[in-house]
Length: 211
Image (cartoon, rainbow, N blue to C red; front, side):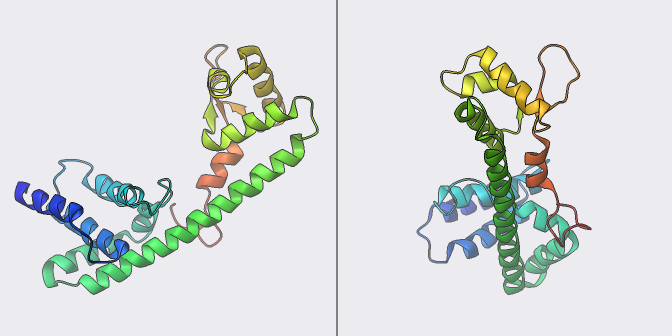
């Protein structure tokens, strides 16, 4: 196992001779084949894909969620990995892997559009209110962090004091944009349900699939 991991690391740092997505398919298979983790090997292997895309400057942020594709096609995923091990079926595996990249890239674009549409809706809703500029800053922050506390708002946005953050959160809660989820009087946590739904809800055609 240690020898195989050294070989994999050497390949990771070697001068590329193949397109990056093809390299990723080879690397993912090899990591799963070596199986170095006692637990969570699949999660680490899938995480390695997006981390390498970011490290190679192909993604600005880890926005490609291949785990969803592999989960929806779990049986085919394992069959393709096994076929490489048993009979060197690299072409079939790489086609499957590249199809996953395509599908999940389209998925990420569609979810990004949903988030942008939601953000534009919020901006239209609140742009004419008092302190609209600050309130819009709070709304934008929800798209980066949809589960927040008042302290999060006060700390994240410059020159906003706790009482101002408290007031903005109350406004968004009264409008149904934020929902308090602890039921506590202190140390309250708020959730932006529509933002989370835009990220996690199935897209058209995925209603019967687990995302």
